[in-house]
Image 1 (cartoon, rainbow, N blue to C red):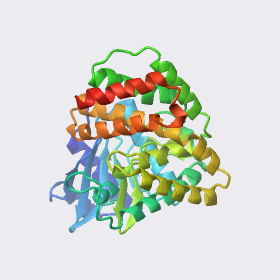
Image 2: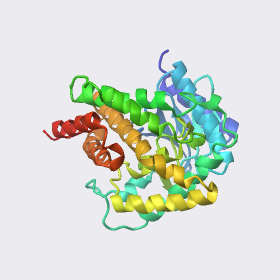
Image 3: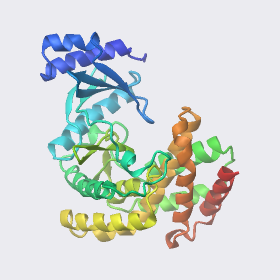
Image 4: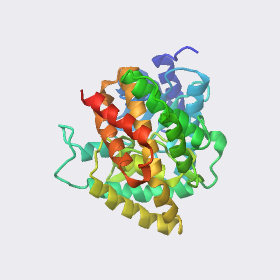
Length: 358
């Protein structure tokens, strides 16, 4: 289906703002003529975003699909349904003010421009040595993550999911190890299929798939999806939420190549998360640790596949710089005792590192 024009999106948003009661009819009418809108960037998403300003203050954010395909409209509906659910559960997500089913246009609370990634990283792209408050924000993020995983699963309706209702082995094989092989190994590096690798990836996925998967899973819980507003963490980009295991979102945050957290800090944060989890869901810590490395490896594969696709196919060069650190983290994880038997996967990743550095 054709793309919805910016003007139609903004007119739709104008009506939603009016219906929400945030502005009077006269104020809403002026949105399109008095320079009250700022276009916003979207990282890897194809969606379009605008900030709505009123008397010099941020009023809300408009989010709209790139087009009107069934998948894009379904994704928008998921953002509306899941966002309302999490907000009602007390999870620190933006309030959703309005949604138009026909166009997929959404109005969200504006959380500003400061991401956790901005606080951890220097202008040169290195992790900050002037520690400041960012470690405390990681602790807060993990506390709220544990809450989101537990209470977010309560009353969660799988029909809200636009993509798939659960994180499972078929998803891992198609969109994580398969994504890694298609987009990175073959697409970016130009290499041929490697015999036996898919069988080893399947074995790893089947082990990861044994983790209990009845918790809320964000699936992109990383430092650029955590906003800092008024000194508190807030979570965005949750529309791909579904039911899944505990370890995946924790790994997403801790192995995040945008932040490049040290191994020592990751271990400290795992301990923080474990203590919070024990309070929210006693008895879950042992299983969380049992499957964490396997779920972290799955997340690592997804990251590399996504960054390869976004940089090569969509031409988003921002992601290129993060492929090598993500690949090195994958190699280091495979060096652990849990993965000693996966010789073909380890050899492929070693070869990938060499080709990337060449």
